[in-house]
Length: 183
Image (cartoon, rainbow, N blue to C red):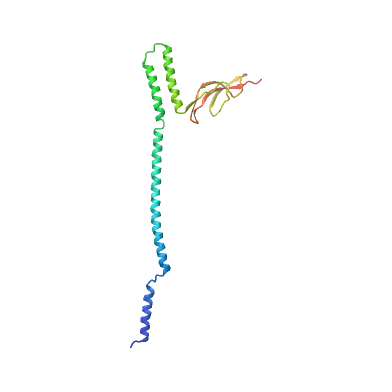
């Protein structure tokens, strides 16, 4: 016969074995399924992030290459327009001009080519006229000329034309300005 104390020990041992075996409930199965879905989503998101970073880096690199090329070839069109002007000037130096008038005509034709190239590329002259108000954005007055017949701070004479490229000042027009004499 069995000792009742022994029987109790066997039951206790069986009970402790059951406690160590994890019991999975329905709620636990749902959590495990949600965790699996979250892990899949995390993997997909991580992959998408890596692709987005690679795309951004490729875009940055392409933009940098485009910028480098744009800087390198920015004046290509203008240079192409200048070549015929240079050709005309070189031809003029190689020819024996029969007269001053022929030389003048050649220079005028070359100047027309140059003006046409400037115009095509947005290089505009700043040519102030006598009496025009001085514009500090476009003119540089290098001398004041006392005068009774002109308003102060107006152009008396143009020493050198100025130039603008689109809306940017390349060189101001160099002028002398009127200074009204005290009466």
